[in-house]
Length: 176
Image (cartoon, rainbow, N blue to C red; front, side, top):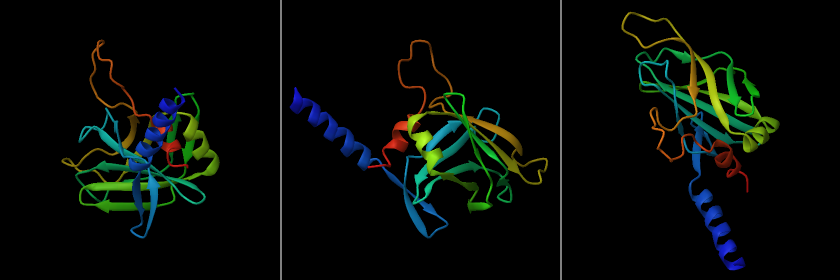
């Protein structure tokens, strides 16, 4: 029985170590990061998805938010709120760290060690962010958006699969 438990523990550690990704920050530094989560963003008509990723840094962590736009002059800007499953919130202040890759815009927010510790123990429920810019008649939306931690947009009552990402477990895996 002990051998079975040790084998299972080794499997978990090996799986989490192999599943780690790297986040490139300002094309110079790379940090160990979670997989990218595709949060459902119901009120964002262009794609309905916000890509969320969290990385571990020396002093805490980084939150990366990426969305697809029709105009790469738009930015994800302003204060962003990480809403947790226990009804607490983490406020992320905009430091103006942005990245554009084709039609995708990204913004990075710093997280301190206390906030990263909180994220290791509590699931992210949703994220509230702003897209700013000058909209035209044929551009994608600007304004306030909420991205929800859901894997699939639709599900049935009989669907027994996991409905949200295990954010806390994947963030915890960044720490040996």
